Every structure is written in C-alpha cells, then in structure tokens.
Length: 328
Image (cartoon, rainbow, N blue to C red):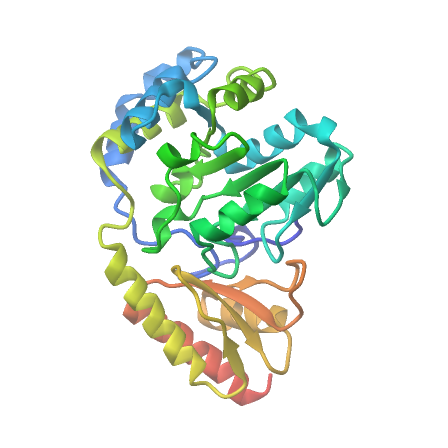
C-alpha cells in the first residue's frame, strides 16, 4: 500500500480547501444523507451477501445484463480480487505513473513483472496524469496481453470517449473496473464494480468473500444510481474551469504543468520539493495538495491537484506563487 496519498486531511488541522483528492469537491449530497438517515435501522441486519440488488441497479443504469456486473467494496477491492483470481498467470505489467495498488496487489500474489505480462493494468483516465487512451490504443494492448485490466474509476471526469461497459463485455480478455465512489463523490462509502464477460465475472465471484459491501453502502449506491447521473452536474464547464487553472499555473515561473483531459493535473516545481510546498500550503494557507513524488516514475518536485471552482482555484494559485517567489 502506498505511503502518502491524497485526501490525508486527518494529518492536518484547519484545512479549508482540499485539492489533494481527484473527486469533485462540491457535490450536493444532502439528498443522499437524508435518505441514509431513514435507512439506519437496517444496520441491525446483515447486508445481502452478494449485493445482488446493487448489481441489478448498476446493470440497469449502464445497460448490461446483471451477470456481467460484480459489485465490490470500492475499486481497491476489485484490484486485489482480480490479482488473486488470475495469480496462476504469474506475470504482469503496469503503465506508470499510476495508482500503486495494481503493482502491490500483483506482488502480494507473487507475480513477476514483465513488459509482456499476461495481466496488463492501466488507469484510464490515468491517475495522476489525466491522460486518456483511445479505443485504438486499448485494442493494441488487448492484442499484446492475455488480459487487459482497465481501471475506469475517473470515467465521469472527462469528456473524451471512454469504452463503455456495454462495449467492453463483448471483448473476451478485457476487465473494466468502475467506481461509484468517484462517480458520486462518496469516498467514505467504498462502492465499486467490475464489468466483463460472464465467464470472467463467474470466476471472480468464486473468490470474493460474502458481505463485502455493507448495508448503507448498498442503499447509497442504489439511491444515487436511481436519482443522479453523476456528482458533477456540468462536466464540460467543470473541465473548462480545470483548464483555466492549468493555464494560470503554467504562467508561474518555476512551475511546469502537464496537459490533462480530466479535472486533475500533474505539476512540477523546477526547484524545490513538493513535500515542502504541501506543508507550506497546509500550515500557512489551509490548502491541501497531493505530494506526487511517491508515484513510480515521478520525482521530488511533482505534485497533483484537482480543480475546485474559480474562486478556490485563485487561492491555490496565489499560494503556490507565494511559495515559489519566496524561495522557501
């Protein structure tokens, strides 16, 4: 498990603005909170052992048969479940920089890393870079590896075309991971799911432990799927806001900002450490960013931020500019 991650607000006091998580920070969750208050009596009972009602709701929402869906306690459980289930294939590869759990899960089950690994893991859109691979690029990877696992947790945070589950379940060696946590901005509830052809889903289901998803998470997932499309009501405008942030940061001397197709982006201090910038912003400004130096392939000057609204973004821009100009 990676040491140091986004949204580590528990390590700080008085954080006002959180740019460290890729999840939309201004989701309106009052309807969900009120709904869950009415469901609290359900904690007296065990949840469904297989979250079948949630899987049916997911299948109805995305337009695939329920037998092509496997609900999990967040995308992270899906990652470890896939690694466990396909451990006999022995080799893996990961497109870096990206989420560390793909590699960690494979090493837990004694895989060997190989450029032509039987299991190929990618994040699309990619955390932390914001890159989005095309269907043509995915097809190329499908032809080179026994299985391609595509973590699509951030599929609701781009306007670029992302291969749908309905398309994906027709491809025999493709496994797609999805996240209701990200889609609805509810990271504390841990709700994800896998889509794939029926044979793969049956194999994965034989390894998942019962009662993986708690009752309130099941109820939250069903409520959000029925009532909302996404936490972000206007993704196009939100991404325009993110691009305004990127352009403003790019104008700061001493800072490099990579292009992105999502709401989040990778930045690099040309001198200094991102860990020092993080501490300055947290303690002096009440602003939290993601020190990205612990992503494989990135270095001590890299950090990741996700856009908020224009007013919050202006505070972030001013704080970063102050840090760089002061030579701290």
